[in-house]
Image 1 (cartoon, rainbow, N blue to C red):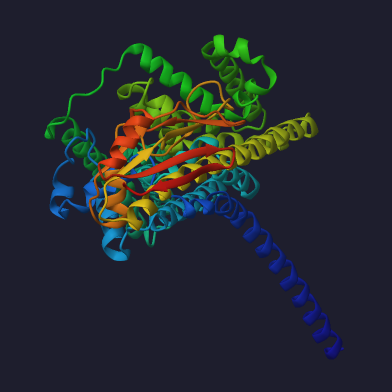
Image 2: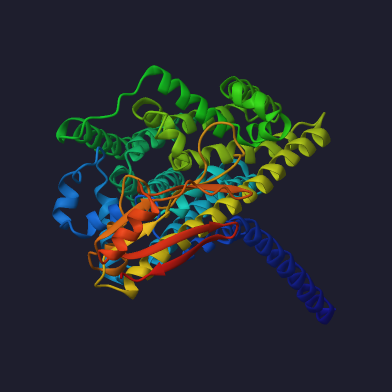
Length: 528
């Protein structure tokens, strides 16, 4: 009957609509869950102060004209990152820039955007579930904390955004023939901009070229070759300008031992779900004595086992290519930076590598699922490893957030003391230069938090936060006070209480910072 047919069609349409809505809702959850995780982990950084080199870099950018920022490296810098310093200056001019949260909000948004971009990229390669796992691992990647929580690490976030965006646009250009020129133009723009944020971006053209190799289609090569050649030429021009176009301060000597240490540091990060377990399962004393060999062997075994599982699932080539790209992005660090005093203190250097490493491990359960004979065991073990990496990554970042909150409290106490008495010179006693945990989760590297580094005074911090110059000194009167879980190194020259008293008599205002388990408390004394 006609009425029955109409009712049946209506019921079928409603059922189809419900199923479609369910699929859209599931897709939305899978896409947004890693972004929500990234925001939950790093939104607390909006409360942080300026840390590490933030004050120095921001002050230099503010006091330099745009044309000077674009045309030459800033004095004292061995790198050329014009777009990064232009971004610093723009934030200052658009929103004032004296409040740290403006810059921290930008960092958090960039990290969340990068998580979203990686999810979209992996979805094209390996499907929805793998993309969700890879994006979640990237959101909680332990070594990313320094890049997101410290303003002067914005270059690592910005260059990663350019690289991921360029790859996505480039892949879209290969599929969308009608609007290919739009996507190619966007990919080219991002590839050319990437080295302006950070020198790792000079590899953007090579990354775009690597996506054409698996296709092997002459038509794709012919259509995309002019755009690719432009990207490679632009990146090559940047490298030539960086190496030979500018006078730079003398570089620190980098030995082959430094390069070997940098490679092992990368191996520790590449196999981070496994190398994290070394400090849990191995005796601390033995691990301290044999850290390099333990990390090297365990990382190589873990990566080999991971490639074996990927091979069982028919994706060994993709996984190996991802690892190679991850190492390629770290190659400039390996070749040009010393390990001691730089790489070991700079986990932020691993941020551009993190998407590749997260993808390698995030695709592992998919490989296990595609292995018919041992599907149950492979999925269970790989899923357990990914879940453990997520949990330990979240815990790792949360502990650094606590350290950053303590460091920020000390920084803001100095700012408050100067704001309360703008006409008086200030002495900071026992302010923290750095904070560290008594035992790190990984054997190699320093994974603490810098407050005001010993090679910078507090004057730049006060000028950036308050807008005026204040005479300020810092003294380390007492040795570091070790708390139950953490310790700190005092900032400034060694001094005595008698020297502090003499400065107070001479008209200096005294700010004494005292460490406790919960952080730092401040006591201000007016001059006599």
